[in-house]
Figure 1: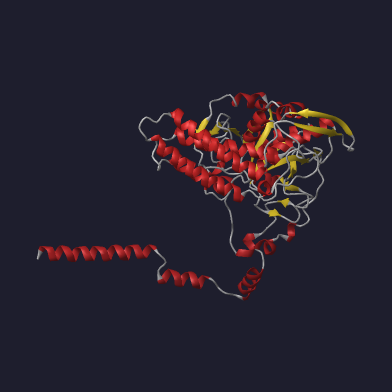
Figure 2: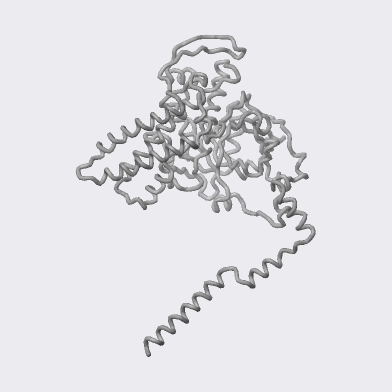
Length: 466
């Protein structure tokens, strides 16, 4: 009898729990109320018909804002020919190298279409990232596969995205070559297939290294010896897809008119020293991350391109102070590495970014009211693309009205290859800027001396630019 009552109680308890869980879902009453809230008025029907056959952005275009666009800038760095990263995530590399390229063209009177070879630098980037992954697997070999860092490594063995620190470390180590010495290939301009194959092979190698690590008598030296053998296969894959990087080359320099000036033999390092020779220790990444405390330095673990290079490190500042540095650099005719959430409110035909470009609220009958901090906190916004900041338009009091960037999507995209943004958009969707030391105040430089706060590599705010 006792067992019978217990069984009955259990069934009743289960039914109560089931009913309770059901109330958390969409009940018939809730569904009916939701359905009735949609009036299906003639206006609703007209909007629905329009959306069914058109791009939302076409319908949400804000005609009241159509006259706000102009291309005059009070201060502009003399930008040259537009580059094109094609179907690749190498915006960070194009942007960093375009900063160096502008200086080289100006200093050496080179033709406007001169470029450094992006595929040369990309080759070493992919080899170094492969080594970074494999060595990180060795370093974390005693941690369980479910460990957050190990899990992150296997999820992100390699990619074609990155940031400015990678450019600095790579060209300092491997030098540069002109674009015509190592030209682009299909795989460099369409990176996804090669990247998928490299990721597959690296994950396989990662498992092998972890399996080797638990074997009796296995030393770190033996693991690293096996890693070196693995890199031979990676090098072969890269050479087949991208070409073999030259160890030396002969190159004829021409002036801006195309007249030959000199013919010399170079190594990639000697070419870098003659045409760039930058001290990258005097470049600093400044960031606006409203989710974290300002005036603090942050560092992202494993966010580097070269194992023995530098992690991505930045000083977090309010937008007003970042704008002051950017203005000072542009006034001195020096471009900057810049990154933002490029897709938000972008009028692709005009190449114009303004928070008032599209009126989604009126179209959908609601509001979209999150601020920058809320968007970042909820993964609605983050840095996605790097470009070269090259112009600012100041009002009579010296305050910025709008900005312009040199993009790397070819000369036919946007405003002749450039993108223009209002200062309001700049404040809402700009995240990172790399500024030379001479444009940073003594007070701000002092802040850069503090010990960095280490952040995990999986933080969504620090995904590489593509």
